[in-house]
Image (cartoon, rainbow, N blue to C red):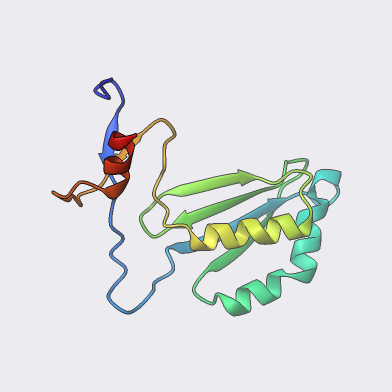
Length: 136
């Protein structure tokens, strides 16, 4: 079966230095409503966990936008210019804490579903799994 009809790309290497780590998330924007019920989790996160998050991650600018009757969401802006939005309506503060840590550890590259990822690494040796499968 040919994969010629599936778009493909190479996985980009992050230029993160040797022996050092640079967080790729530069700005985290929390959008919420003061009174809407679906924003209750983000309000709890701001009261309980946001100060600890900012102390642990001083390189990330955190902005809070209050929008009237808007669904809550997290917007992450990365060093490569990409943005990612996550809708967090009716999520509790623990789930929002996990999502902010997820955004913090992302590289910012867009991963498209249905995209065949290729690597530049190759080997001339046949993997042992292939040999075992051929014998069966």
